[in-house]
Length: 424
Image 1 (cartoon, rainbow, N blue to C red):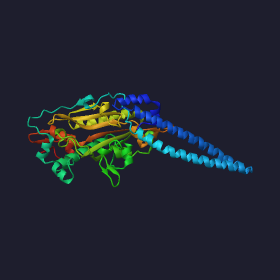
Image 2: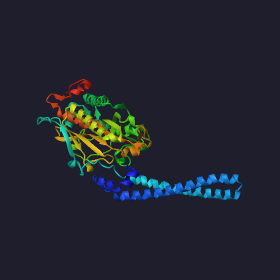
Image 3: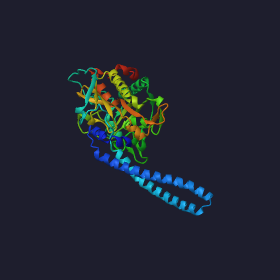
């Protein structure tokens, strides 16, 4: 969330920048500033009274030693009144601070200066593209038919066990899935990321810390009895490792990589664009997360983009990198690059990764700070994360793009992990 100091000092700037995200913030910000004024007024009065209370309390001892009992009695009565008034102010402060916080968390993060206005995918900017789009025969099959043909993923069995959007991987399909996870993790470790295995359920504080709650509560599966949430991405537990932590500036950036299953309630509309692996409720994903120094977070973002680019390139997939416009960005992001791979049989681009810098937005919720050597004051870190990579659409593109008359060729980099080079 945005800091109150930033809102107070740069009101007009915030209003203008949030228009890039198609968010009208003026009414909310005016309410925030009124609540902040009330809060500061209450705190000022309370501080004044506390100062007077401290002063009188010291005087009472002096008066008692000097034998001025009547004056000491009058002073004590004044302290009783001051304590009562301070308690009253404290009672008034609690709802004001709650209202102030509830208004601030309604504001999305400010977009980076490079983000263009826009309303959706058609307004995104293509940064670059790579790879070669394969030329398939007219008999080429979409991945959902290839899956059935080679019996590698069972959607019907998933429906029996759980419901739609929960597939069962089997045989060479399961081995391909595991191979991709291992490849992505190994490449992350080679790039300097520390592998972690986090819980796949989180509490409310963790959901709030990274911005999933309360903004995306309807998209998350909840375990109501325990008030836990199944994670939509490893970003949530991994970033929350650093909640309520003060870091040494010399330790930044901190780099973690994690594999987890991910769970999202999002229900897509009917049609070919959500068939097969295109949209699932449970899917596997490897995530990279960085806790970065604010002065170098955009260098970190560039490095993360290059890392993801190396993965899709080594898999031999045609890809393009899109810088999202304001209207297509998430609530929490300052700058996001989406990776899309070409699905040759579907003849369309599939999003497989988002790499984002959240600047201090999540850190302010997390209360994650750092202190540089020699500095007395702490500062908020910057947080970043990226899919490296989400598996379902990667698998879809691999199956479609590499199909031949005799089977599906496995990308060369995966063969040491799968133990086979063709699905037949």
